[in-house]
Image 1 (cartoon, rainbow, N blue to C red):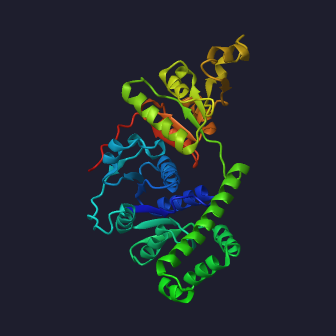
Image 2 (image 1 turned 90 degrees about the vertical axis):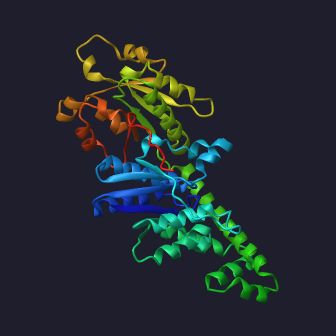
Image 3 (image 1 turned 120 degrees about the vertical axis):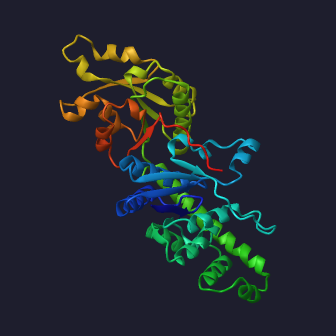
Length: 390
């Protein structure tokens, strides 16, 4: 089994990062028999790599394993602090959860657990998907050289030339002294050499470099937010719900954990739910998470073919589902093998980015997988929660 990890900045700077990540993950899966994706929770980049891994597991479940890697103090921190929603990956959507034993930090290195975890990932991987810009001089960037110096580690670099160009252009706009220090460090000068030239201490030179890098990062983030606001990097995220089966406590708990995660991390706002579950606890769980600042829209999906030849009007169909839903839609394909075996499920899949169901309740799970497009994530509500390996 090949083991693939990811390395990136805590912040996302590339508008097309999702496409680049997906293509790289797809390439890894295509080239190897089985692949284990190691997902480490840190920064905004982790949600993107998890999404790429989930899509590949949906497409090739027999080849892909997703392992969530947690720091050894994760569970202690959860007891001490209120953990943020965006850091709560539901254990029911991954295949394994591990907390690798790391070397005890020295007294001088006790603030660097993140760095030690990244080193562990590099040492235990055969493939690395990297989106780093060494021009930003972040601590993650320094590990890229370590990765390139490991002969057994294959590195797939998905950094974008447009971002590199933007960095080079913005450097010319920062103050002269900061630009001089930045360009000198890039040319190979040490802090000590620059300190003697400028008549300051080496720590002061480092502060000047950090100031210039901070301005560059702020510029990149401004460009990223501008692209998101204009819609160039934004995709409407939605979730389909079908074939859930009996709603026991485990199913409901998994459902609530997953939708919390999808709402907070992937900005899911629209839910398409199969008609039999409109009056169920699933809809009530979604409604509890809606508020005036974050309205969640629920659409009931029913089979329009059942209405053909009847006197039922579309207004009557909507009235039977609204409320609790906001609207209803009738779907139904021409008679084909997919529709005969799965009914309206393919229509829900084509509408949603994420699909929640119990695999054991799907009439034709093999046909479902064949129908799913490359960009869809299929999650099993009936999957048991993984027990962490401590």
